[in-house]
Amino acid sequence: MNWITNYVRPRINSIFSRREVPENLWRKCDECGTMLFHRELSDNLNVCNNCGHHMHITPRDRFLALFDGGIFTEVAVPEPLADPLKFRDQKRYPDRMKAAQKTTSEKEAMLVAAGEIGRTPIIAAAQDFSFMAGSMGMYVGNAIIAAAEEAVKLKRPLVLFSAAGGARMQEGILSLMQMPRTTVAVQMLKEAGLPYIVVLTHPTTGGVTASYAMLGDVHISEPNALICFAGPRVIEQTIREKLPEGFQRAEYLLDHGMLDRVTPRTEMREELIKITRLLLGLPPQIVGDLPAPDESEQAANDANGAADAPVSGT
Image (cartoon, rainbow, N blue to C red; front, side, top):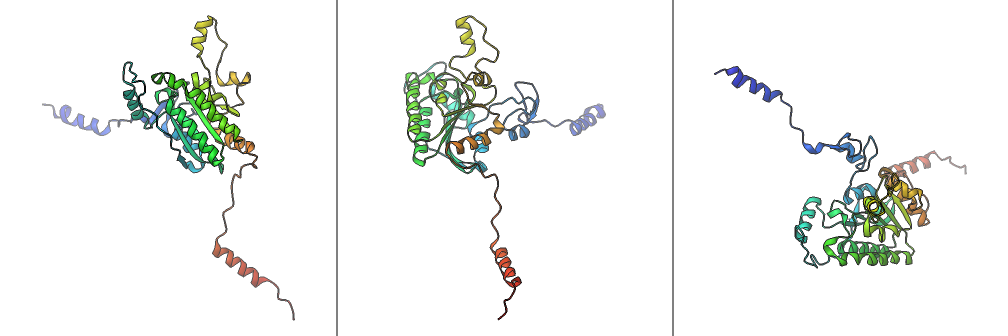
């Protein structure tokens, strides 16, 4: 037996071998291929530092960056029937729901929250594309109605972040009924004189685009977001013509009057604060305050001021 080969060499290799690096520490940009460290990517709100590509971000992470101090309160949403049509394709609908809930750690495809941005109280709702492609079902309809009712009750503007592949086919006509339901909810805000701001993110398509996503007072989009009813591939196959470069992307829609702004995610909070306060008729945001004086220091300053004051003659 060669003890150097069988014992010494494996021992040395085990000591000096490279440690295994967890797979979730680095993420590759889908646009430019740059490897991004997870902390830097998270600090930049999942926007590539190299090319500015906007990656997926969950509603909860979005709200942590949006609200003052990352503090918000979730608004309760009425839960609809779990499987009204007893739908089954390759899997049962309840099984797909459980898989999506396990993957995202969220109950459904929309999160509704109340909080403040720049000391301006608002109600916010955001769709999660990673939850069954952010599809619009009865829960999403209930969430938008709950958000509108909460906004009217508290007299706050509603900011909605859309991201969806369209209506949820597992709920059939019931999902399509959410289009008029959410339109009525938006009308409630307009009758109450409250601003309704929509931020369209990648992608926003189908019945969502044909309803509440395009009914806002102000429409903002993240860069290069796909915003459409039918996708470009379907349109090309239908008309049998090549579509223009960038067709149905945010910048194209901005040039053709369908959007008001295209704003990077890292600047979205400041943009929403300015627009919200402008629509509410409020003065500009207070960026910073001087700290309140300490009571003991204030008392000492008052005493020193009294001692230094000149004494009048009698």
